[in-house]
Structure formats: structure tokens, C-alpha cells
Length: 144
Image (tube, rainbow, N blue to C red):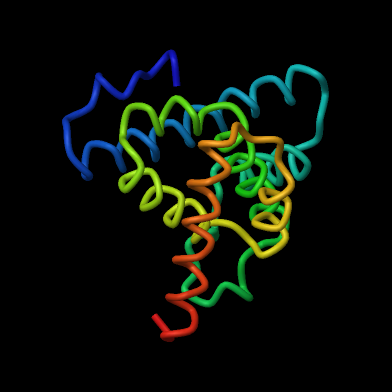
């Protein structure tokens, strides 16, 4: 993220998505170089690269998502919640943060969301997370 800052990309969703995609490929390349320099075999390296690139995570049928890739995504989301949520909430405000949390939860497994519920968050962040969980439950009840 620091070697390829978001500010190097155009504003808007398309620029953001391009930045995220480029970051995944960049990080996968970095991990691949590190693993190969330490003697890991090709199939081991390829497996890690697949996980870091998050290949297959966007499957419409969530049951087909690679469990290792999903676990990696959950871990990334948990780090975001633990380390960055309070700062992001201060920048975005409550309503936008709840919307962001809903989008974050949509990327997570049920186990990841359960783990997120146990994080030691600041009270303001915990409240926003609870609101997002409530909205998620209401949306599920409506079937949306």
C-alpha cells in the first residue's frame, strides 16, 4: 500500500478497484520472490500466490470459494477492523462507516464475522460494528 499509494490512481470506484487489483498482484509477486529465494518449490509458491491474489474469492456461489483464500480474506478484514476502523470512522462518519462495514462483512465468512465480534474495539467502533450487524440481519430477514 505504501509503495503503490491510492493517490497514484484516478479518483472513483474504477481507480480504487484498479489500485486494489494492482496491489494484490504486487504483493503476490513480492511473496513469490521471497519464497523462491528461500528454496520453496513451485507448487508451494503457486499455492501461496493464489491465496495472496485472492483467486476465486469473488465466486457468486460462496460454497465454491477456496477455504484458504477465504481465511486470508477474513484475516485481512480482521486486521482492518482492529487497526484501522476507528481512524476510518473518524474520516467517514457513522453512516458511511456502517455502509463500509456492511461491505466488509459481505467479503467475510460466518466464522470471520464471529471472530470480528470478539475483537477488543473502541466503544465507538464496537457500536458501529453492532449497527452493521443489525443491518445485515435485517437485510437477511428481508431476503436481500
